[in-house]
Length: 219
Image 1 (cartoon, rainbow, N blue to C red):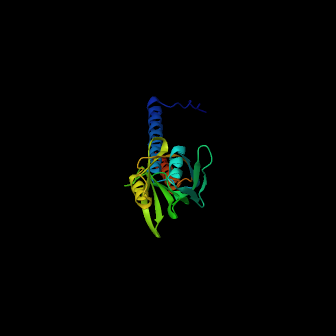
Image 2: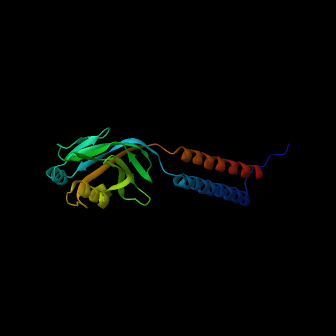
Image 3: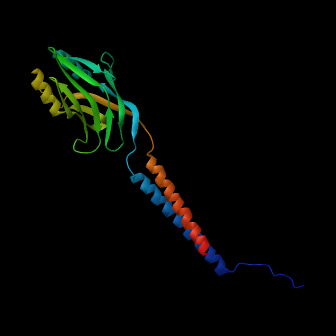
């Protein structure tokens, strides 16, 4: 019987398989990268809870008390004005990491029997009020929505916005305190992955698998 010769792959065959392997790897990398890019651009990450703590400026709190104001939290917010530094905590109710962070509760300012409530704070991350903390102002039996309360600076430092300062000055006959330091905010938000991101990643991976299967079938 004739002896079988050892099977050897020629140089051209090896190069052909190597080129195919290299192209397939490049395709996987590009497709996966595209899927990740789609995920990153798919949208904002929802925020479902947590809280924002504001360490209040002791000097400003003392100045307001000296002007005859009493300050009290509006539930479910809490406040400890006797702490060092005085602080207030506001529950986060929703929003996302690119446009806004919403809160419940607020603070009530009372002087001479007249009360002004600032509540339902929104940290604006985008839009016309970007860099401001806005909310609802309840005074004189009426509610004004989306009022700029505080300007947000470096390190989440809060200063009194001109709109609220002018309102307080008009309502209570006190000096205009625009730019007064309010304190520093610390946001502790609980976020969940956007379901659409996971779906897009799945679509990207399935696309890579289908492409490779077609290449194998053609070979």
